[in-house]
Length: 237
Image (cartoon, rainbow, N blue to C red; front, side, top):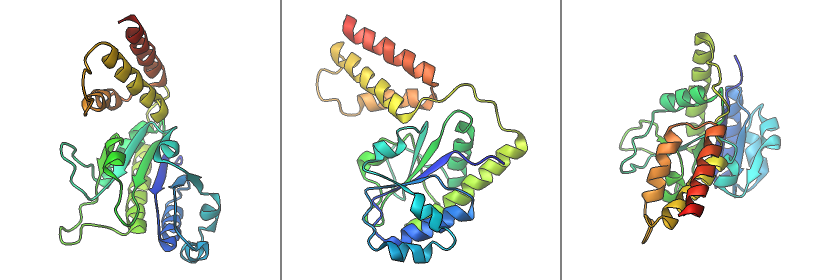
């Protein structure tokens, strides 16, 4: 079985023990692509105590200054949350893992987890392509960060094993990365602004229109074509 092309992104983790336990959970399922965004997790010795047989993951973890930086090369970004977000139906962990397995031949998926205090901010959830939630009891909806990582790591491993059994699909071309899709979104914004569609506050218009392109899972070539066409339209208005 090939290694799943999934990156676990922990945003603003504050408790060292959770970081260590998350490393152990990833190691349990043979996963090693993870990034900490603006961590403030205190004493690294506490993390090492919980990272049983996963010290190599703590030593090799990448640290990013922003979510954008952490997911820049990813084709699909899935944010995890226990909140209800109007108009967005959350995927189950198994569904999120299957989506990652489908994207894998052409690109990497980021699974994004918020910090222990308040999770992902509304702006961070809005920039994710999809959301996912663990179906917990309503009386205790929030999970410990490391527990959540373990649940998704198990789901990712299972989906990858299922894809291997079924025969992994051939890549139809490299998927557009998050950075490239954000470039298309900016070109769309400029074209709509220059064309007079955005005469006032933007609100959610550009985000909602760009979301349709993200759902189309554009290839890198298609993203370049969209970008070039929108920029030409903006210049020609």
